[in-house]
Length: 74
Image (tube, rainbow, N blue to C red):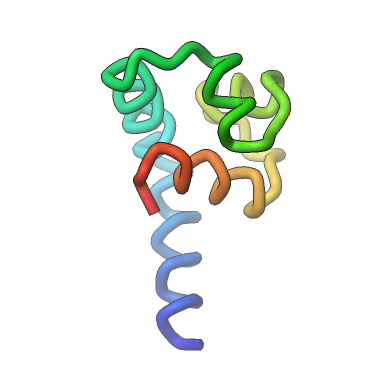
């Protein structure tokens, strides 16, 4: 349980700095995925993925984790 809190804390801290957004875009492009393709694979809507890549903070943790997991960044 402690590991979960540490990971969530690190995730929130990194989100504020924009780290995951830049890493997500870089990984997505290196895998030659469009936003639409990644959204489908992650099980999220394209506007959700777009918001994530723009650094908007209104996303659910579940959506963020789906995107990161699909890119192998979990």
